[in-house]
Amino acid sequence: MSDADAAPALDERDRAIINAFQGGFPVAERPFEPAARALTERGIDVTADELLDRIRRLDEEGVLSRFGVLIDAEAIGGTATLVAMHAPEERFDEVAEQVNAHREVAHNYERAHPHLNMWFVVSVADDEAVDEVLATIEEETGQKTYNLPKQREFRVEAKFLLDGPIADGDLDLSDLGPTVEPDGKESLTPAERDLVIELQGGLPLTATPYSDVADAVGRDVEWVVGTINRFLAEGKVRRVGVVPNHYALGYTENGMTVWDVPDELVAEVGPAIAELEFVTHCYERPRHEGVWPYNFFAMTHGRSEGESERRIEQVKERMNDFFDIGDENWDTLFSTRILKKTGIRMDERAAANTDDPSDR
Image 1 (cartoon, rainbow, N blue to C red):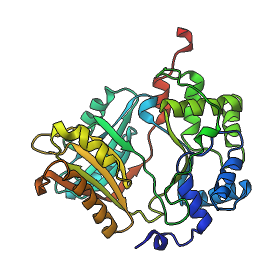
Image 2 (image 1 turned 120 degrees about the horizontal axis):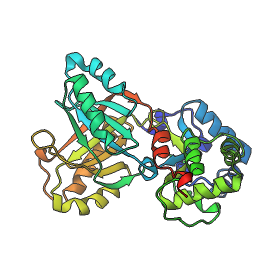
Image 3 (image 1 turned 60 degrees about the vertical axis):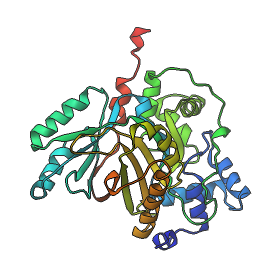
């Protein structure tokens, strides 16, 4: 199945918009005007009003998950960690309900594995709170948890491109806003905290989204635009643009490939795997002796089982450039069910990393 079969309702302009603006959308007072001009220069004749209307429609139809600012939660404060556990088949739904009841659990997936069949993300404002949450989950479920925190990040770029115009997704207009310099601070001011919380739900789909955000946080639009651009420079914001619902685009095959990479090779292997355009996430994580022998994760997405298998084979071929891969050195865990997906709780994490004005 091709992506053309998966999303038949998308015309050429829709596809161009989705490809072009998964990152690099302008952070300027009236962003749809330069965005439309840039598309027109690429041969996609569209006005600012039509561009806004199309993004709004794609959002309403569920083709997009959201439109807005992708915040790097780790750079804002607190921590998030991946956790695996075994849920007995006869108690699976009960255990899932117990795990999902914790507000710190943001995502939870059932994955195909003979033992570790439940995988969830714990997000907390205080790093030390992870152990408390996991201890409580173990007590409630009677099942051991295996914490797999990120040790090194090689890539996080979940872009889902379609056949059609701007197929490389290389239209970057992030330089159209004001030029700003990082201020070197890791913590947030109260005003920056309020901005982060306002942005986490997405940008308003209006001709002046940043002005609307400014009204909501009680600041002027110049401050909002300047702060978002500074956050981009600092890494607090990964990118600004449309966030596709990859299932709606036909990317239904979600394969978490895991590898037992010799420790001394991880620093070389990581960048090489991250170069593969279809790898959306790539990390080093710890092993758990006797239970989990893998220390390297690479997430792939495909639009069919065949495409997914070909992409996994490409990862394996690249791995073989560094060491001989045996059956015992790797595995792929496909997601079989979404158990919970609520997103990272940015409000608590941002608040915990906010300066107290009385300390100044």
